[in-house]
Length: 128
Image (cartoon, rainbow, N blue to C red):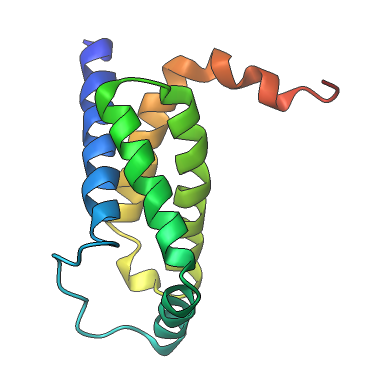
């Protein structure tokens, strides 16, 4: 049963990031109607500097890796940084939108990462 939960979580996480990451390149979802000024300024800076292309590219590539079940630990490490920034953005600049998507994505990440925790152990070595 646990393996099925992890499989479903991996596929959902992969779909979320592959599809929503593609939205950064091909806009197919509408922008929210009211964005707080700080969040709008942050979005503007990311778009103007083209930094958003890097972030969306990481999302798309990681989402695809999760969907095809290849290099899953690498995809999870890349998404950890993205998810941490998503959480920081929503906590600091737009707390009204913290629930549900950022919390759900974080929970899915932990469900997928937990069985693979042995792969991450070397990252926490004090001396290589």
